[in-house]
Image (tube, rainbow, N blue to C red; front, side, top):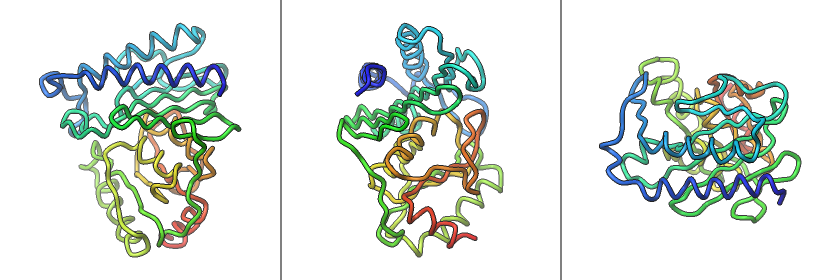
Length: 262
């Protein structure tokens, strides 16, 4: 393990302690713009901790976070950029659903270089480094190459955009096409963890019609380094400067998706 990835992993573990020690979460939430888009004092506290700790290690990096205090709205084409979701699955966090994570992506010259996703509730630590592979708790992981009929399918419902027919109706149109061809469907409330589940073979495919880079930058690198495919839903490359659709799958399921939905 490289020193830099090891440092980011340990920093994620420290951030997880803030989540585990949280109390009175519902009393410390407020709404951001959009359809039910909550943020808590703990989202801000975790992000502030991550920015401070990571900046000491890479002072030249820019920091792009979901909450306040972002340096720049888009990743840099040159040098290092962190894209951070302090608590992915905030609604789960508020409801004590215990399925949330911290997501840290480090981009180098505009491309994902290191990805770390940590669920402090069960200790799952997913990580990847460009060209080096992907790991769960230090053990190599690989995406499933089985057909959809032998896999679960994960999905997100783009809840902040549920008032827009393209996202609301479009999500369930895709599900109607996929459901007859897979074992079953799963909706967890954390896109970063859903993507990591594709990476380790717990599910065979995941999609969501729109996600922010905070949600997918780290986990999509983990998927790709695990031998899976991660693109936009039309097959085009991911864009780390704005919200886009995300499709991630093992190679066989990825090909089958286009056969089923076209």
